[in-house]
Length: 129
Image 1: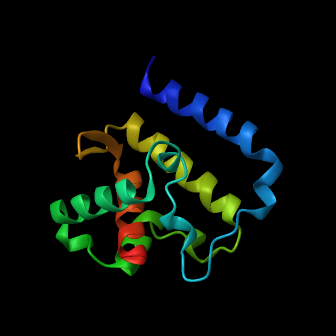
Image 2: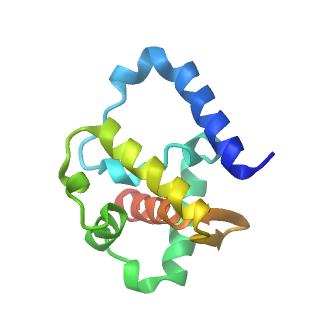
């Protein structure tokens, strides 16, 4: 199975399973909606996400700033200032798919991640310490 199909199938399954509790999914205070790699959080625990983020930042020290990462994740769009978490997640999902389609990937801790996913992990590691 191709990774793209696996991601889509997993995303649909995750939505179907968690649909009843979707309304309670809001970001805790101090956490930016862009810092939650939703798909990866189904595969990784918090420590693994944090470690992947730290590893990515070692490879890209110029991105070791939460404001810089949010800017890179948003690609100069106004999405980062949006309060609509579903819109933010749709935007990031599309960006992740585009990263895979265009080969914009990075190897982090043995995983091939979209650069967008790696940046989300990095942002998570900066916010969560």
